Length: 414
Image 1 (spheres, one colour):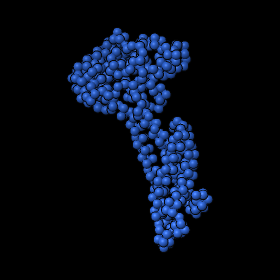
Image 2 (cartoon, helix red, strand yellow):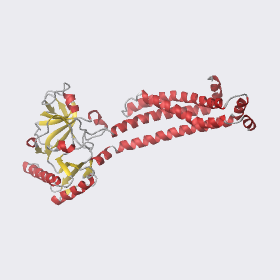
Image 3 (tube, rainbow, N blue to C red):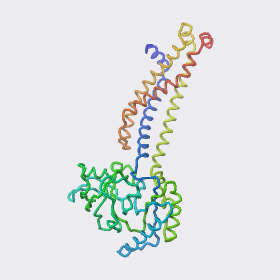
Image 4 (cartoon, rainbow, N blue to C red):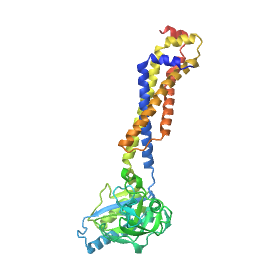
């Protein structure tokens, strides 16, 4: 089958051809970029945090009777209140381990510090999230220690966040160790958190930072653990509980802490949360984006397929006489079917070529205004192939109906 008869036939229906071609092009441009963004969001949703999320619970509360002074006596009292809470939580049924922990991955707020290998460096090599906690933090979070050791009880200090005291030892993630010491000899080396020196005594495989904001994507796994119980009016604890018992433990923890000291506040929204709930809240926006874009893609593809079906059906109705004449002259059903399929393929091919250009242009605009990465060409190629297949499938039903028209009935219908 030559292309010239197809082109001559399509030129007699310029308006319909132009509309379908533009519809295919715009659908390809939007769907390719939408699927690319969906893939990025799904990748974010599935990012591992580095902790054993199943059975991990966070308790956070604020003392209403906390001392207002910031002297040593007030600090010691705050620390005694925190240690009493930890003891009460350890006695709960189904609790396997408890640690003082001001931060957890994905929770949102965090402290961070610039990273240096010498105090003379004016600009930090990178940035890292700071996790304050005691010697039970590693086993409670379920972190994988790949080199070195955990903190000892004797190394645990306690002070306020504004204290000038520096932690003498730290545990870093593998990404921090690789960034600061590419030769692989980070263990035992001294680093500087801004200007405070600390010796690396351990390296964990992975620990995601508490933020999922875009500004933290480049250092999402750059984290440092410090052997410090932070003293303040608000204290948070990480609990390792038996899997499936998170809700029961959170309820029991609330009752135990209020029985110990009722002068405290534990909001329902964030006072007691499982790691599953924290993950759900952190990625709520990403899940909404995925659902919205997926819905848009389905609607666009459906509308495009419906447009192809409608236009092809309209052409079949207009060409019944020509179809009948061709059948009378010996054209087989398969010849009629192939003609309409080829006609659709020609239109769709023009549409996907324009759509590929539109898709790259739209991606360039997103790169400039929304900081979206460059779309790989594989997305455009797969999208083009998918639209060609959808076009052929959409045109098949009216094309098959045309191929079944008998020569006499087709001629008499005019």
